Image (cartoon, rainbow, N blue to C red; front, top):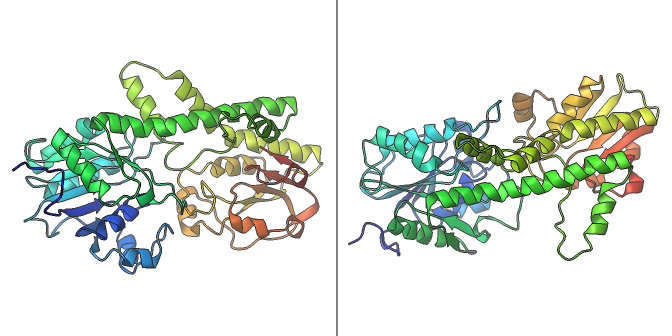
Length: 429
């Protein structure tokens, strides 16, 4: 009998390591069908999930409770895994460091923890975004060294890149087609079958782990480059005195025009993943020009926006020094509490460098988290008589705000997201 079959006659135990935006929905989906254990080293997070509360707001209490075979733990130690095949799925963050290089500390720490409990016949599937080759070149050696087992003889690996879109209630995990792969042809079929059993949208089996890793990277590199193109257009049209949104609306009437919009690029994917591709390419002696240029443009958009705002204040004779300013929104996208790599921080830092006293208001963001991560205090309520208001994130809650209630008669209102009519604002991106 083969070690891995196309079908799953004996359901394995699923252990999901990392219960953030990616891991929790995955654990819940598997927990509806298989014995599943969700593991996170954050004990507060585990306690909240045991009480069916998700601080990321991706899942409701009822949705978590529907996973009747799911339990939670803060450590892999002492889990009852000795007598059955275990599929470990690692979904920890893969950020970049201050030098914009891949930071694999969470990934390697998770691999070490799994290696300590890994046994013959087990499978380790990675979902964290990495550069091509990382799974087999960086993670597998840690698994082998820690477990004392041999790769593709005693244990096996797979890679299935996450495609979670935080805050999106339409394209949820079961409705997103997923790429799968495995370290042998047999394992690849098993991984594909396992994921297909919980997904409505189905799967796509990549020919190798490295292909699957590369596919994930170029998904976000492509978006980053496209956004950098329209951001560069915004820089050019600003010098021409042309409204970028009006240009894009006109060009968008052509059937094959790609409708990207300029803006701040943040989050856990687009602002990070291109650096993984750049790192891998440079290690091979190739220095990516297009991807690197796109990153530089997008990384500098916050400074451009802030300076555009300062010019508007001077033109409208609104005193800059000691002005009272407000930024509406701090998360990296609308209607979502995720603040990872938010581009709003660049606008905030640049504006306060001009001596403006900035308030930041965001009903979606966690105040303690923002203060700890960015040293930015969020205000709990809006004040009045602002000299400057910057709409940075298009939360639906902001639609109810009347700018007349919060601004001085002479003020500047800037719309970074370009969601308001041109006539309603003093400037937009």
